[in-house]
Amino acid sequence: MTALSQNSCEACRIGAPKVDEAEAKELLPQIPDWSLIEVDGIQQLQRQYKFKNFVSAMAFANQLAEIAEAEGHHPGILVEWGKATVTWWSHSIKGLHRNDFVMAAKTDDLLSK
Ligand SMILES: C[C@H](O)[C@H](O)[C@H]1CNC2=NC(N)=NC(=O)C2=N1
Figure (cartoon, rainbow, N blue to C red):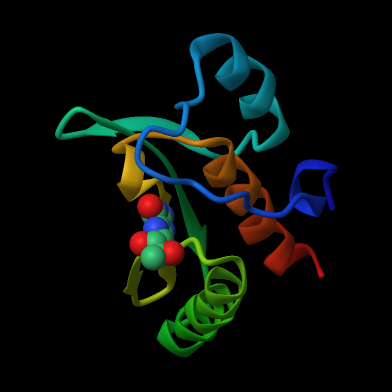
């Protein structure tokens, strides 16, 4: 469990500041298995998790749905046989907010429990 995952999401509204390069440099090492990607000009965090079958991947996706609902911040999840790809970004600001790094850390914690 990392310090980052102990945080909660703060309200993220249109106009909230995106994580800048300096902050991203500080936060990314705390979630070392995540990649910074860009889709349609929107920066996002993405990680693929491996599972032994489809049901395990789906169970993980459902656990993630629960914490997403609790925090009011929601990921993209692609569930396939033996894997789940999770993508975090903030729709309201079309980019990365600190919340996305917090949620990436919380996602990792689901599997380290
Ligand atoms: C009204 C509701 O809280 C907002 O639309 C939330 C819901 N979940 C969200 N999730 C993500 N990832 N980005 C958002 O901007 C966002 N907005």
